[in-house]
Amino acid sequence: MRKLALGIEALAIAVLFGSFLASGGKLLAGAAAALLVLAGVLGLAGKRREMPGFWLWFASLLAYAFLYIPLVIVVIFSFNDSKLNAEWVGFTTAWYRKLFSDEDMLRAALNSLSIACGAAAIATVLGTMAGLSMHRFKPKLLPFLVFTPVAMPEILLGVSLLIFFLNTVSPALGAMGIDFGLGLTTVVIAHVTFCIGFVAIIVRARLAGMDESIFEAARDLGATPWQTFRLVTLPLIMPGVIAGALMAFTLSIDDFVITFFTSGVGTKTLPLEIYTMIKVAVTPEVNAVSALLMALTLGMIMIAAKLAPDLMRAKT
Amino acid sequence: MFLVVFFLLPALIVVVASLRYPGEFGGLAPLVSARPGEEAGLTLETYRVFFSDWVYLEIFAKSFGVAVLTTLVCLLMAYPVAALIARSPKRYRDMMVLLVVLPFASNFLVRVYAWMIMLGPFELLFSRFAVICGMVYVHLPFMILPLYTNLEKHDPALLDAAQDLGANAWQRFWRVTFPLSLPGVFSGSALVFIPVLGMFAIPEILGGKDDWIVGNMIKESFLGTRDWPFGSMLSLMLTLAVLAVAAAASWLAGRRMSRA
Image (cartoon, rainbow over all chains, first blue to last red; front, top):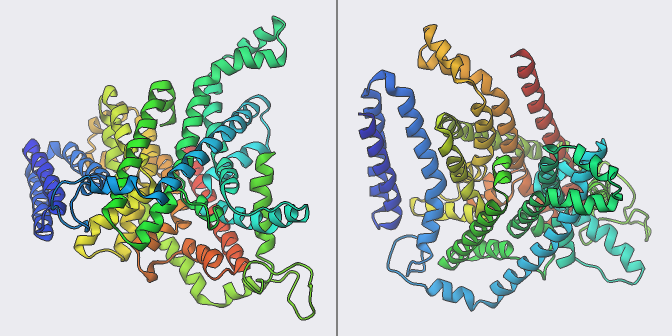
């Protein structure tokens, strides 16, 4: 009985899914709802003893479907031969071809990549230092400085940096004869600010499990502080540093809110470009960029998981 | 040092900016008056406007409403998933957690856009419902992960003991599992509640004009009307709200812990 009910639920999810591809969307969605109710009733009619297990599966399957259906729909419609995201017409790769000949989009992608590389490099160095000193010296103020940008709503960091750049840095540099406006530099600085925290958290987690006596042994054997760092500490925390760098890269390339406030008029990144497209005109070209971005981040995560499997687990 | 310059300093400047007059062409008026008759210096004007007009407090209240609703829906959806993962055999757990985090890997805007497509054919777009859908979708993993981390630590023997003592499934959940999971519930709720308060993209893309929340107001005062002092004041208010929520969550979690 329980298996049957779960089977019906799976079928309901499949029908729900189909309702987006077929023209009779509403009808099929109704059918899906009816099937879900049926599955629920069957589950109730099942033996009472089995109920907690059944409802757990029922609700979890729904939640997983909720997480995945929207994204799968986006990918499917990126191959749809229609200007509207409403109904399946036929298979095409035209949207991808259009994407690769769209110069604005390519420039935005290039911007995103260079910002992410720059921000990840700087944030990794500074974040590692922050993680190390938090572990070694247990300072009071530093954790607050490092973690607050991570915990605050992004918009707050965005607007405060906007005011700071335009109202404080720009006039100050202007007085010295340097022209300073919003652009790539400000975006990189902003990204570094919120990435440091994530790198520091990962590096510190890596250090937390370590035996202090290794570092003492290095010192006893006559290593200078620099040698201890380069030959002992750094190799040991390297997986953490790499995972942190990848994390910073992904965060930077994905960031929308903070970039939105600190990029000014001329500089566009991929998320900003997507935002404009969504607001102006929704075409399957947006689906195509989205699908490509998904593939890219997926690849990054897989590399990160390969490089530091223990860390991926530690993070969750 | 980097963070002092690019995080602490800007934060302090926002506090000061909230006390200044708006500039003639947007931005901020100078601190020292350059021409006679020009407004300069510091003022509490923005705060007066904020507290004298119910509209702003209403938007704050609405933002809290949206955040509460999002948090509750997330909790309802996340609990079964977290519980299921925690009760599954060890070798499947990592896989199931990964499946929760994976949609997260796609860009935030992509995930919001996905809901535009999902709701479009049903004429549900640009409504409060769409906003909540988007909010829940984007923040669900933040709720599942802390809950799972908490539930995973529970000793199954406790449930067996409860059963032996005659508790039915419902009682076992409400009297044993749920109270023990409260720290996870609180930390997950804080992780959902706080970012929702500052969100502007989801109400803007999925909602109608009526669904604007604090985040939209802040964005609009900085980039739309260019009334920076007002936007700074709003940011400050939001910061205070966030701090209050975070403090409440950690206080509640701490109190539960010490009682248990």
